[in-house]
Image: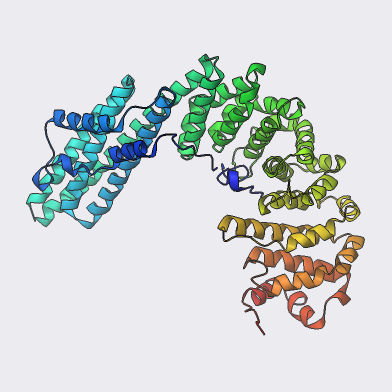
Length: 542
């Protein structure tokens, strides 16, 4: 499948996984940021007395919180919502880390460490609950979780303290099981409480989007939602369930908010990395909205590019649910036409990447899309784009192009068009794709480009004219080099298999193009035997 990536959207899961690279830093003074971090990460042993006994008087804990709060300062109005979310996530990370340590230390029977970790976790949880309650009115359902969680944390602290004063192995073994059960309950309760708190914060942001007419206020709320989507699929599911996709498409259906279309659609694309997001999109006829934006020449290029990103996301082969694709098929001709036009007119590499990634995914699940693309002169447009460094400037973009070509090559009429557009020369250039850096993602993209270029060449070589053209352009020596030299194929087995298949297809039509020694090793044996021979082959440096 196609996996688009580039410097500005490295984490984007357009074709593979949601995704991206859009993390937004808090715009605060560096000293203030340090003070905020100190507030969450300072060692809480200072709140304990000898032998890590917990301080019983809660007022002392509150006083300590107030002292640190005064040092940290208060956030400006535009950053209040973001600060609440960031604080909640940081605290949650700290508590989760402490609970994870406690599980590990419990297994090893390190009772002193178990107790001190329980004390720290207890302090962090109490601090989180107190701070969140001070910033927001806590929903009744969440208050029940808070009360239960605090009680369990205190029980955990007390029971671990009892284990410090005995060496009775039988007693400690029974306590280990009891502590493990309580610790599991604490983890589950804490997770549920955080989910409710996050849902509460997300509801606040969604209300801002739905109730405000101020572009800046709506934009700020969308930015906060987008930032949250970068924290993983679990948060994306919560955001989708709270109705964010519905609210964002309401924005995209109002002409007065045209300047927000791109921002809103980028957030939708991130949310749709999970099935719940796609279900919500389908319920509000989001595909029709995407088609309207893509086909509207009056829409800004940025908005059309982000609409393409959503299309790429919802058509990703990684999604198990395909129910939404039924409504997509109704608008497919319009969407495919708009996407290939966007590829042709793209002003930069990122716009081309998003449009071509959407096309690459579409060609996987419906052969009709391939026929439409051929009618729209897609081969000419894509091969011309490959000559334009402004549009196709990375292996990720080339990966999308060669994916589309590979899927188009199953159609018989494709070969003549590739020949006419000198596409064989381009495929041979793609067979030589090498990473320009040590980036693992770039290396993987280069492997995909090489593999798909070989697959495309093998499929197209059914046509005798194209096969002859490939042989005349020295495709055979290049394929042999890729088979015999691991570094030339980036040590990729998938590239090796594809090259062996392409070489055998060319040899079947023109046996004299292969030398006897190469024929004996690469053509005559079974494919698996040739593969084993080449994959174990060490390069000669003579």
